[in-house]
Length: 327
Image (tube, rainbow, N blue to C red; front, top):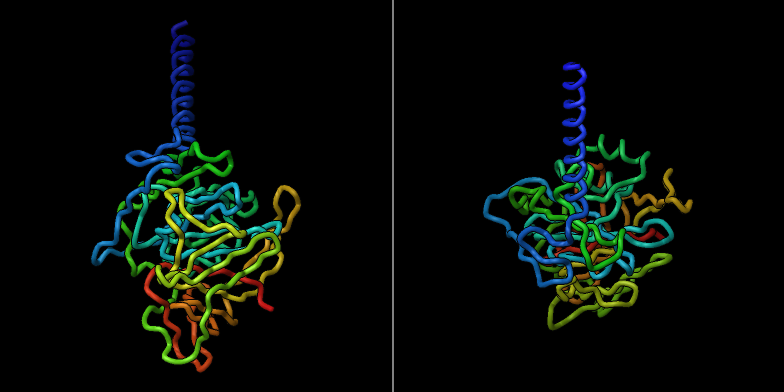
């Protein structure tokens, strides 16, 4: 009898512990739509931690939802680099890379793609924040030289917002993944920053990049001295109403092929090949420059050169790289 009583007490204790753990994970994943010490995505701007002198580390790359239902996004303006890639059905998805500023909240966060693993090889042990991935892709993600930080691995770093319907309402608290700001040295993209080329380039007021079911338009603002972004014909602003306006825009022409993966509707997932060479258009200071890009190996950054082979420097500030299919 005493043995059976002890066994019942142990069973009840184990069940209680399991329930508590499950509740904790669910709370971290869904939350109440409000980051600790911050605001909901529909509230006022959230502050950022800025880079400190000498700080180094690994970048944080966040997969950002970019269908119309996911807009406006939160703190896209704080990223150092924003990559735009084509996904299923000709739609687009973004990867925002943070190194010099870490906002209190970022999102909405969505799933990773196979192309992301090649793109992220240029960074040293980056963190990848994403909502999940296809089951066959997950083993590749966990074998890649990066830190996978989905809600499964870091439930307490995510919460569900109240401003959008699921699945477009998953947000990240970056400070729960990064104890310190990584610093500019973590941006091993190969990009160079400095004055514009002394020759070449043509005046440019607006440029549109089209995917089968999405489009990006970059319009030069003389007043802001930046390129104002519009997506699918709508000006791009953050949840705080801040216009997203990079200093440099790169349209990088790459090979886009079919991958071995499909979505639940059977649409093939495109694979964007970012290793190799090709052509590009670089927008800065109200001008457009024809360029060539080169990335010999996955661990290398991408360099850009002018038509005469000289380095093509970017303007100081945020960079957008839009991957477009090579003609």
